[in-house]
Image 1 (cartoon, rainbow, N blue to C red):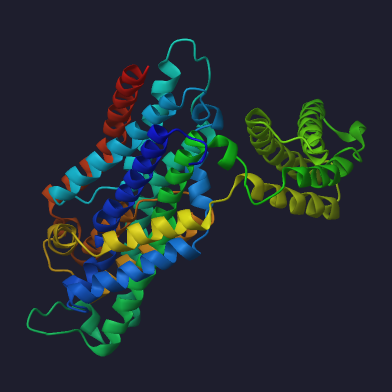
Image 2 (cartoon, helix red, strand yellow):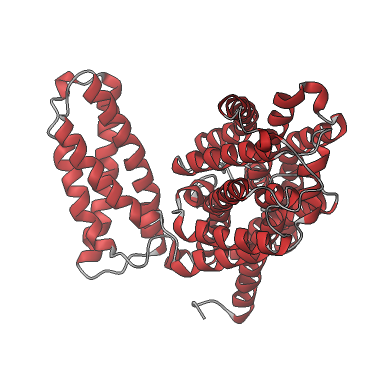
Length: 471
């Protein structure tokens, strides 16, 4: 099957199942955060809450696009995945999956809100760094620009969650002075008032959908890494698009680029333009070759993928600079090029429907179990006072908004850390810093700080060990 031996086919299926297991664990590890407030405030019974959240996590993956998935894939250059020895790629994949699963299960077992996002990205960082330590490699195994973006996103988002939730809680208190039911926690009350229940269900739904649209995409990105590593000829470029059709789009871009008055360009931009044209000529030559009946080789597809990434990044940069100062390309020309660049993205930034569906189901099912440990931590152990309805609404709204904004920019964020930080912010808004339980906050901060270094070291060690075993 797929042109692989029986042994490699079985290993491929094992890796895909392991990726689904990671997403399943992500479901009951991270998604407990989405249902924490509706369960703790007795808005919904646990069984209904987790099924509802599972459904919207499923829909979040299905409808949330693939920008975050592509961001995860871009952390590792394609050259690292496309190894002539498939067992070397297997060592990389198993190292990052096993690390992610081990750390997620361990932190869930002790009821510690820990980020699956930090775990997966730390695992990717680890194998990338270990790859660069191998003798005679001499290659950059991490996309440091993407690493910086992902790292900043993971570090800054909890701070945003804390600050915005604190502010929103104060705002709710100010605009609802006449109705203080939002700010109570009555253990004797069977359910909150109907309008409060509706508000909390809405915020739970928003967090669940946002979680699926961000965290679910990480699973999609992981599966695409596996498929490219095992079957580069089939998946390194979108199999549903003809390689030959690339040339027509490249020709449009070239026509605009060469129309520039180079006398207006700075020396740096002249060099940039020359580099872009060299890459477009190379991609066009391969595309025209396939148009004449030649099947592209794996190396052809690899070069197209690599060069299209360069063309997209450098051309956008050149257009931005030369429209602002000096006026080299008109706004109309920029729009034309942008359209063609967006069309070219579809050749490299894609995920088969069955991959998205597989991850959606895994995340949705995982949501329906294992929620209790994290719910207790969120509801009772962050603050010294019980969570009120207003705190739940504030934390959930901020979490959903932060995740949605990050997904729009293709950035990974941690639902766990944004929500727990949001709850902490509302606790401070309610009764000041004295309202926080220092032990829990210390544990959450510790997990926040150590997850990346621990998973980097663990995945790097596993990769080097497995690479040695498979050599």
